[in-house]
Length: 255
Image 1 (cartoon, rainbow, N blue to C red):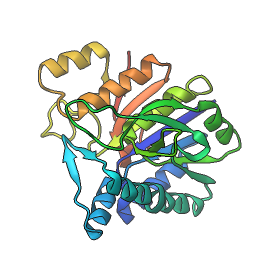
Image 2 (image 1 turned 180 degrees about the horizontal axis):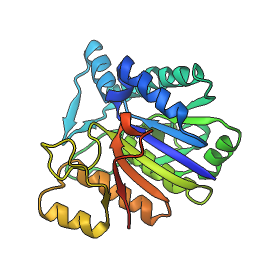
Image 3 (image 1 turned 30 degrees about the vertical axis):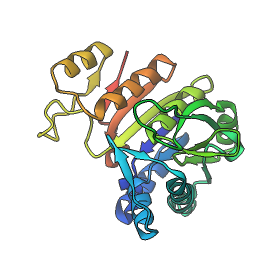
Image 4 (image 1 turned 45 degrees about the vertical axis):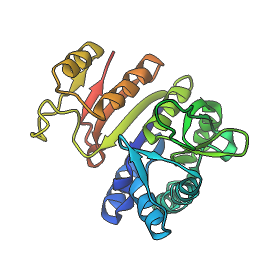
């Protein structure tokens, strides 16, 4: 059996028109599927309305106790339930989940090194059997970027990481295709040319492109996550644009 895991950033799910397009495309994917979403811009906006300043370091949110309340409300509530309601309207029996629900993702609080990220979780364990059981009942998980530590604490957790770890946990049960969706059509040979998509990248290609400066910044950890997933048994990893998930384009990651 096949399962497709789609990871989309907050920007896609926070705007009505792009969310509707995504939900239509996601609903059309045949077979079992999982949606993993972000929601950072909504969290920043709600925090500002509450007078809570958002602190970012290298694009990552510092999650203090007040910010944790906001991201729990926004990711696990507002953003997640909007998606679930939209899928139900398309006859997809979706179930919104944080990692705490059914103990599906357990994390540990990130240790303080150079930077104290606060209540941020590094994934320790994903319950693939539990997710596989839901899928077998035609229940579609919609996963928010939140986990828990098993001691009563919620933890803000990177959505790319949740998608990658979920894909690895489901690999023993399914042929897993993992799709990371972002604002470009794939990994680009030339950042200024949106059509210069590299159709396929091996690990050797990746190292060469990094050395040449073609792949840089936030794309490096995204690709490292992708190769990690492939080596852990995920059948296929694709990096593409959310609007392209039905087209089969983008950049395929191969060993």
